[in-house]
Length: 110
Image (cartoon, rainbow, N blue to C red; front, side):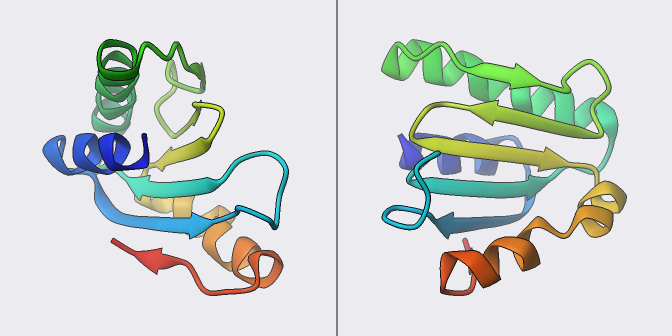
């Protein structure tokens, strides 16, 4: 599923895609993916296309929050948590730094 997510983000021109391994470090998921879109509209579009691809390719209906605003969209696939941000919002929350300290290793740029 992670490969499908990363391919979808690449196809839709997501920027600064980062993966954070969580397996054995968090019970919520095995991976976290953080990416940016250039605008609220692009962030919402990336999220919608990703949800559609996961449903068609894996039969997974994902839970999505924040798509109506497009500043920060959370997509929960079960095994992978995806955060899509506008760049300013991503910079403000700095999830990579927060998880770098708790996950035990630095995030991996893709």
